[in-house]
Length: 230
Image 1 (cartoon, rainbow, N blue to C red):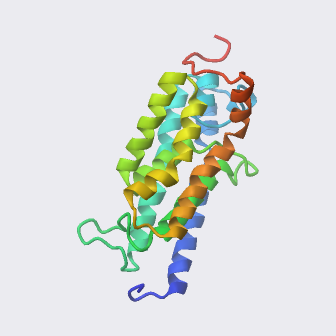
Image 2: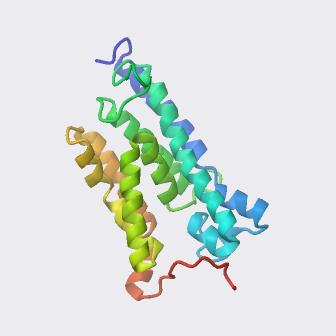
């Protein structure tokens, strides 16, 4: 079933990809770029988060755009590398692309790598296991896995933010829908893989628990393209 590889080798390869992805996606680009480009520690103002929204609020559009780009790219890069590496097992390998194809029998493996990417960003090993809330990296993961899914989630996010002006509303809803859209895209997906994708999406919802409390209290900040204090 695993070609020339057994289950032990498959699990070992998956764990290696997970560790590498966790370490790469744990890089806090918002913090790094805030210091280099904006000369501020974005953790000390606004929400204290290292993601795009707080980078925009504290350091301005340029830092926010760069943070968004790098946080998306780390998800894209890690998933695509994992798809190439895991394809060496010979199962789910596409001769046309040379990578693991979405919807293959290895879905549980790539789903685990995706979860490691997300957890690296949210629980960064470089920031005492604190980090961002996972939306940008999550979109990058979806782009690396199956780009139409990423576009669907981006569309949901943009529409909700445009209507409500709350970034958190778009983030929470699109994250919660991850297992739904994955199942619609790949109805033959195995239950273990679907459960992992659900955990990924719902972890992002959990990361927004403070935003949910503020939304309920009516104190959540709306989207603004101005630096804090201006």
